[in-house]
Image (cartoon, rainbow, N blue to C red; front, side, top):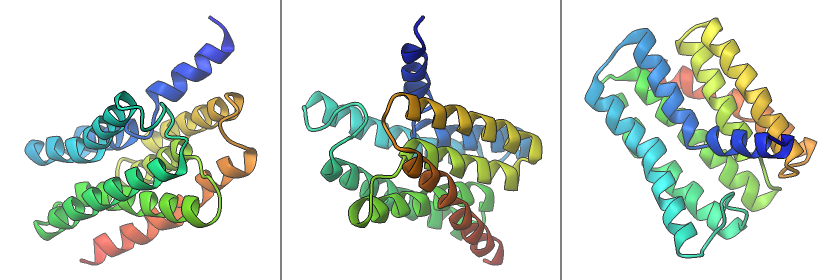
Length: 191
């Protein structure tokens, strides 16, 4: 197997839609919780955007990596709003851990939207992985967080080797979501 195919495989399997799913499953294993809300959260944060993306690919509106800025912005808005609405609903019923996951992804997606729209392309793969890392450090402990951090570095290397992003775009995707997740965590804990 050639290294490029390994990087492509990593990029496809560890895609932005996988990280909310990973976050929810690890938190469920560590803390338990309402299984119905877990399933609904996974559907809204992982499966819904993936289905929209696959449908757009089938219709020829985008490619595998949503390279067109217009499609990337539309998908970001859909993900941001769906995560925000369901995250606030979970917060209203005091499901703080699952609410933190969805609201963190909503904030990260909004950041990606604003950054992509007004500044430069940002690595969605890396920023989603970093969001999962920060969530797991906060809710599942340092071991889960360190494992996810290692996954984040693998994702970043694969995106760079595939020439999908520059080092600057990877660093932006790595650094910018961390304070957002921290702020969302403070807000969720204060409610």
